Length: 317
Image (tube, rainbow, N blue to C red; front, side):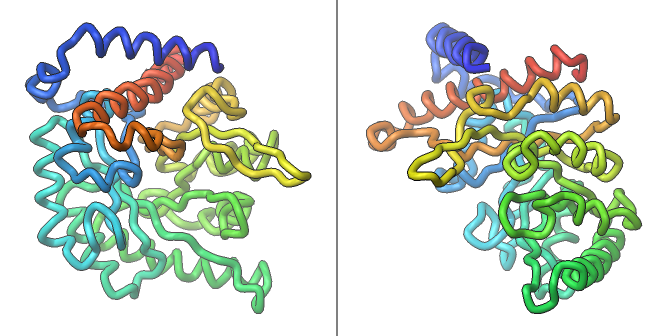
């Protein structure tokens, strides 16, 4: 997979050299065609640049749409959602990007801003949002905690239904509810996928499940509403293992098995590309903004091209 990755980066560099950067910025923006696996970008690592800059960057990298942060410290603050979210979505449309996905910190239907955030999003074309995370209550224990979380998720499902939006819960490595994935499958079993689903995160699934993630993927297949994609390896030092975040194709995630199983299990869902590895080193961060953008586009495009090639190889496009 590393050789594939290097090939992508080399091709991207040639393309960037052949087309003047100012021409790419000025190129007419077209609405993306409907795709079974549109590639959206979780905007967290680029939020600091501001929406105008990061949208141009993502468009040049070949991204289809945004998985927009609508949460504290995000691109859109929840308390300002009614004013700011429609503006951001309109800006994205003008640049030929969709905003069908967003990331929130919502876990309860009675959260003070939950209804306002979700109804505003739904009215403006956002069809899917990621929830915040649930924790196990040590005082309650595992089973009672699951029942409590199930009750909260069911109430949130009713809110989702009333405003017309689908929630998605990401399996996140660690001691979070959903990390083991069977617990999430149990809670989602009797909840309509239309309003509450699994956001299946392959990196976290491999991190927690090693080889058994395939079983978990099949278990959650009928409830999967979105797919989070990233890569990693283990950095072992002093007898301790630590996650090392890497570009797609450079880590231990078996993407061929992953994409093959999308077809086998009949999963069709939008992709959210998560970039957690460093996009710029300390020296590059001091470069002029346009020079930074060239580097960002090159690295992001390599990830996008990697995904698109896998979709083609496994006849999912």
